[in-house]
Amino acid sequence: DGALRARLDNFISKCRKTDFSMLLLLGLFVLAFLLMQFGTSSAASSVYYSETTADSGYGGGTKNKKMVSTTKGYQARSQVPISIEWANFVELSEFADAVSLLRLHFEQVMQQQQQFNHRRLDGADAKDKSENDDEVNQMNNAIDASWEKAIQDNPEIQSSQSSPVKIKNVPFFWHIPRSGGTSLSTIFSNCLSLVQASSSLTSPPIYARGEDEALASRFRDPTLYVVQTKGHSFVNVDLDSVEGVQRAVQGGLVSKELADVVLVQDVRLGSLLFGNGEDHIHADNEDISGTEYKGVMFALFRHPLDRTLSFFYHKQQDNESVHYDPSMEIYSLVDWVNSPSYITNFMTRTLVGKMNNQIPLTAVDLDVAKEILRRKCVVGLLDEKAESMKRFARLFGWDADVNHDSLSLLQGEAAASRAKAERWKNQIVNDEECEDKLLHINWLNKHRHPALREGSVEYKVVKSKNSFDLELYYYAKQLFEEQYTQLGFDEDDI
Image (cartoon, rainbow, N blue to C red; front, side):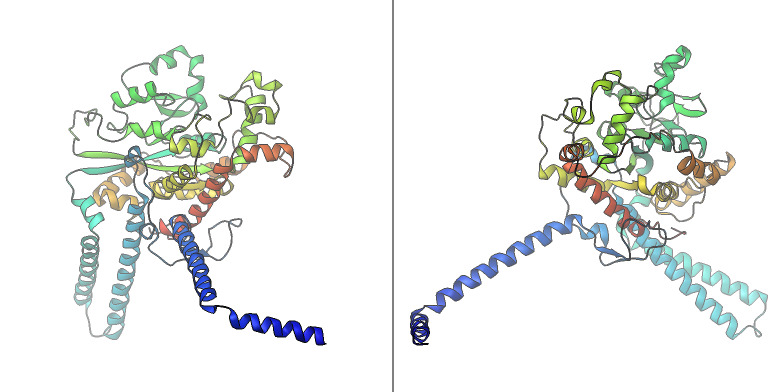
């Protein structure tokens, strides 16, 4: 007890001599440092991470999910600079703004109708038919006035409708290999009767044109037109190369509006189709120099490890595939992903234009790739292919049900009405049975192969080669959730 008492007295004596002001300053410094770190990480994460909440995770689909937005979505984020060629694609914030405008308009319509119904109930016996007709006209005029005011209060949409340069949006599918693109191409043709401008790497009928010299010669013709092959309608272009894209531009693929949808694997190369670099003259010599065409990019995303494994066995074993390579028979999966022919982090490299494995990717490249997806890409998921196809069809009006949807709003009411009439005239309507069969029963290019075992050597090697794509994929899944409400897929009337 005496020794303990002596040590305690010694400790108290030292504490009396301690300069607590120095300790206080040191503590404040540490606290300030931690607050700065927390603030920086929070600000950085706000660029990418959702300002919405969902009542369930990714696994169960989004059809019946209730999502609550706590910010203005696209406009609430800071932006990472992206390169100039992406200006040829529509900013999704434009659609998000249009959706917000439509929601407000529908609320006003409902209020007008409720007020009208209340007035009718209050004076039903005292009013004749002419008085009721007058009230209906007044209600409709009030609705029209509120719509016009909503347009005027939204400068971006007002300028898009009043500008002498009219914007026409072209569906632009980024085909990520082994992610369902070939099957979507078949749905576009067989179920939706869409004319495609595609490539041999995306559409097998174009790849197989070499078997028919007459057909092959059409793809060398400087004049562009629609050809029929194996039940598909294609413009006679192959967008796999710079030469192919140049031929498409020179032939007026976009300005003559020859295709309903464009499909490419190299999205940056495909961006050269848009802009004002070509003569805006229709086939009937109608001058449309006041029209600017922009791509609306959409894509199906698949888990990078699953995609790599599928691609490997497809190249190795499917001798009818455009990707088939007989030399792959001697390769193992690990051999292939370690070889120069395998492109690591394919999605990220494609978006930032660094397709050479010798050029290292950085964290900035990943930031740019995420920002491109956020601002420019309508996201679909292979794991949610039916829901994704439903979203694509609604956005582009392929279900022949055009009301005040956001795409039509940005292009104008008259253009929307003409598009709807033309679709019905040609009986281009959504064949749900056809889509269901292709999406679920006969999903094309299914290839059964062994799965990657988590923790195995193969798993670790493939994962190490796709670290950027893995993060990009999980971010795409998050965007898929966000876009459900931000782009109006939760409302049938938008």
